[in-house]
Amino acid sequence: MEFDLFTLLPLAAAVFVFWKLRSVLGTRNGTERPPYDPYVDGNRDVETTDSDDNVVTLPGARGRRGEETGASLNETRIEKIAGDDDDLKKGLKGILARDPEFDPAQFLSGAKIAYEMIVTGFADGDKRALKGLLSREVYDNFASVIDDRTKNGEKIQATFVGIENAKIVGAELVRDEAQITLSFVSQMISATLNDADEVIEGDREEVAEIKDVWTFARPVKSRDPNWKLVATDA
View (cartoon, rainbow, N blue to C red):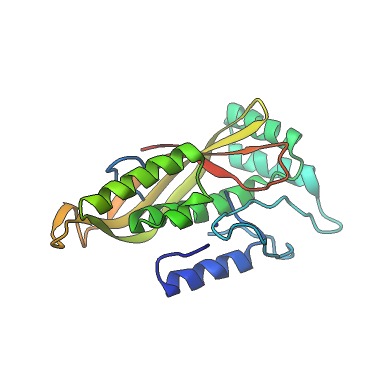
């Protein structure tokens, strides 16, 4: 995913997400307009974590008895996700070799949830919700933009419509850190308002298509399963 998201209703929805998924993942910069169809095996164990509520974590795969299990199952999933992209396949398998519980399907599911949480948290200026999901550098950039908006008496009125498409487009090991890059195409209604509630950017009603390329990272030797957003592009 301290999971103080915006209003009681979104908070309840977020709590449901964390109850439903055993653990699910882990910027936009400046004045960019910021903007997860979960994949869960039917018999996958569900549990909550006692760590930061606003951190979304990625589980490893637990195959069912009599079925393909563990790394073998995840290799099959990598083949499906990577398709004909040999570089992506090599990168994902390299991560799996270092982290046998890495499940690319669960990662993608968690990344979608994290994406929505981050863009909504950024629009609402909720730094507490963002902190556990972002690297220090990305968090500092987000926080700076939020502080500038507050100082200028501006706010963002936003509605996250949904994700049209999300896919893994890159994966690599940088020393002992796994890095996975995804492309997102989402829809969002977003308008920046001044202190008189006048629209100075965007539109209160128009649904805009947002395209983002985000990179999440996690040290493969760490016992902490959480992935964090470390880089963004639009």
